[in-house]
Image 1 (cartoon, rainbow over the protein chains, first blue to last red):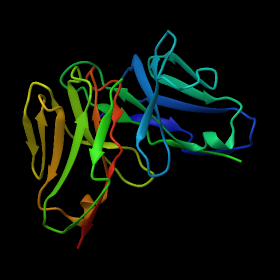
Image 2: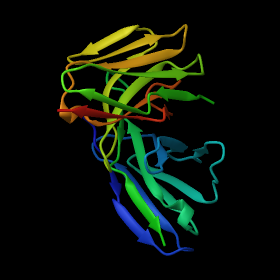
Image 3: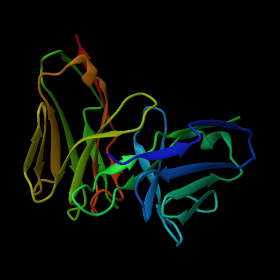
Length: 117
Length: 112
């Protein structure tokens, strides 16, 4: 299947700093990628849809100025958590859908565990 | 927006028995219903999916049924094995495998 890679896998940062998470589609082009957040033992919550070459679409309740999304190329979307606070600590996962055709499965990155201290 | 509910939250079965997990959705426009298996700290892995034009789909020990009228779909795992132990999430989407709205998850434990 298609491969989606996230970097870093885990990061620890100080409160007030910003953290950038990368999501790459390694063997296909993705005009759209998705960012999810998962709290411990909870479900994945869709945060935003990342659109290549245009602004991201945020779900209700997600602060766009807090979670900056950039999709500068067909294989890379980035999520920047700005001025991170301990409550931002979570597991962040991206996904991308493989190109249109027979296979329309959504593939997930391995996730990034963010800990803000 | 879409609201997906999932039951039960935890499920324990004896090895070899069947496991059933049920989900309901709220948006009648949803047309894609995947099921994911997630092991601790790892990415969700698609195990089976179904589209709204099909009522049932089977893949070896795993099957999914969809009732569009009632807006619910279920995952059935037969002949469970210890390696089936994981958290299972259902999801629903209006746009194929795009904006997925997930259920709350079911922690399945298969007892050897």
